[in-house]
Image (cartoon, rainbow, N blue to C red; front, side):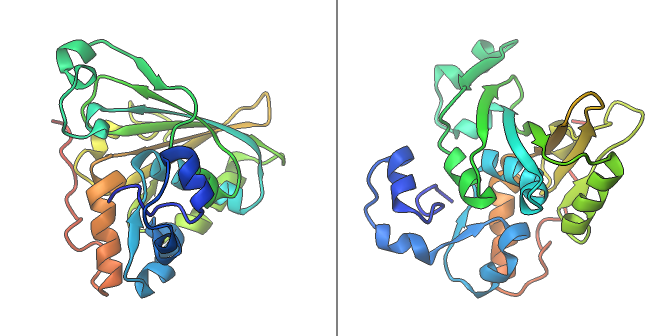
Length: 245
């Protein structure tokens, strides 16, 4: 569940975390995002569950990077207080957080290493703490190297995620939830992904949302466990969510 074995390059680990006591084990672990590494997870005894910010970012961008369509990407996540764990501090105290938008890691976030490893390219990334308790919203500004229509983008995401149990493409023309929203994902193992093409440039805005305690943490760990032990992948993960609470 920790970051200890998420990276397969000891140099990258030391850059962000310091020395590693068991570097020889890094190559033994599979990075735990099932949508990317399902076949390896099936055969492995050692899984390193992916970071929550990394999960939201990687799942949002993976199809575009895999297709070689990205010139550059800039990502900002807005995160709830539970991302910091259960150890109390002034920054997690909700009277202090109330009404706050706190940019706590504008550069050099540790999980950039995971994003770069899985996407095969550097991602410029910032993180902002907001008033909610659980949830992540990632807004990804992707500058494309090809002139693609929204219909083309739809096809790419359906190609990669059309059969996935826990990824939903969310893009509606009306209503208050036209794009992914962390509030409606609380308690679920879904990652919702949406997008909008900027008609005035080569920018594509990809938006993803998840519950950092589920698809960003324990839920994804259970998903990996199910795959490892040949259980139905959604075993224990069918809860539809807490919304509208």
